Image (spheres, one colour):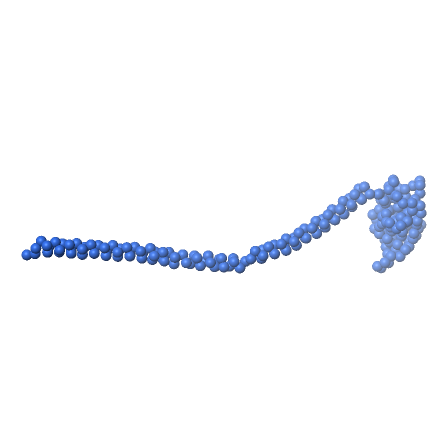
Length: 219
């Protein structure tokens, strides 16, 4: 039969064995816990890698685009657009000035009438002979050319009626009537025979500045 001393030793040995098993179990559990987060992190990194690669591809493409690609082309196109706007503005301004000049001359400019007929023209009948494209000579074979101006509209001391026959691409002088404006009337008149054909009739001052003109055909 074992003595008390032997039983005490056995109890202590059994207790040590249990403690060793407990320590070993705790160590194994700790190692598992350490390995598990590392595996989870590796798994998460593997899951994120495709997204990272996609982002890298986007960044790689955009990194090839330089700021100069925008600033240079933008400044050049902007400069061309500015020049086009300036030219368009100048053209528009010229058109507006021309229209205003034409309207001003029509409304407020001097009033001139150039009447052509196959009968004698008076100041009262001149207005009905302004637009005929063709005129027939009267009974005496004469053509009457009547130039009339509004009160105070004629600033020249010399008026000349020029009659040119249109021949092909040129014109041939047919008749000239030049004189000082009468002090008692506001018109001058030419009367004479003209052959059939197209004519260019215009009235000028001494320097050749044209007061008015028209084309007419004599039948």
